[in-house]
Length: 77
Image 1: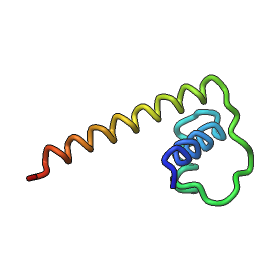
Image 2: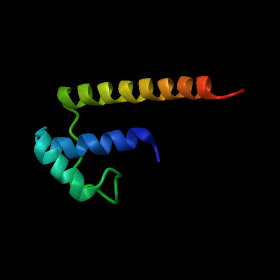
Image 3: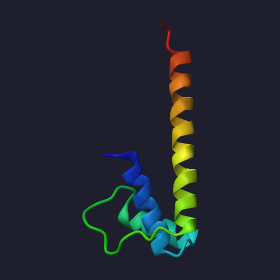
Image 4: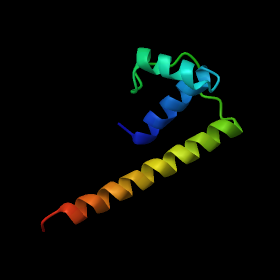
C-alpha cells in the first residue's frame, strides 16, 4: 500500500470531521487507519488540506530517514 494513500485517507477523515481532533479520533477508532473500499465523498483540496498533507509527508520522510540512519548505526556490519 502506498504511504501517500494512507496520509490522504487520514486527511479525508480529518476533513470529514471539520478538522476537529476529538471527532476525528472517534471516527478513526471506528473506521481504522487504513482505507477500506470506496469513500463517500472526495477529498477537497483546500489550502488547509494541502498544508496538512505537506507537513505530514515531510514528517514521514524525516522519520523514515531517521529510522534508516538509526538502523544503519545499530547494525554490527
